[in-house]
Image (cartoon, rainbow, N blue to C red; front, side, top):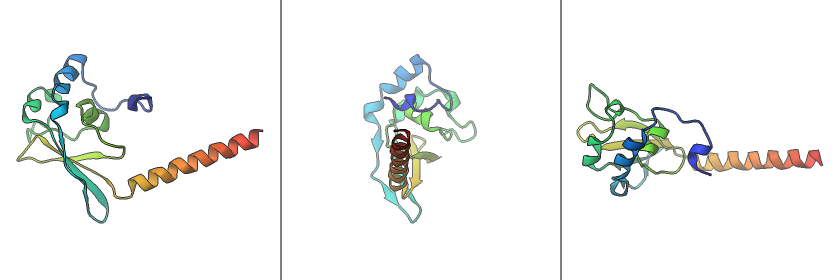
Amino acid sequence: MSYYDTHPFQGRRLTDQERARVLDYQDSIHYSPRYSDDTHEYRHVMLPKAMLKVIPTDYFNGETGTLRILTEDEWRGLGVTQSLGWAHYECHTPEPHILLFRRPINFEQELKAQQQALLQAQQLKQQQQQ
């Protein structure tokens, strides 16, 4: 099952032509190590500078010239691959090819707890139906 099978798309989907152009650069996307503060885990993603030339203009902020804040579906559509929970929250204006991401520091623990609670609820429901 793919990511797109689990929820409806949000944002503007790339055309097949646009997606083919941006995915030519996917292997050159660089991911920083994760770093954190008291509340969030962070990482930055560096797109190849040449990739910016093939990203559709409506993905950019007209005032700053950087990419606008992208939805998860949009940045995944550009070929950025990360685990769940990451949100694009800023672009580094001096270097518009750098996207900044964050997620709550305990996201993975909370996700596992939610999944476990859901599994237990499903098991209980099955037992009650028997």
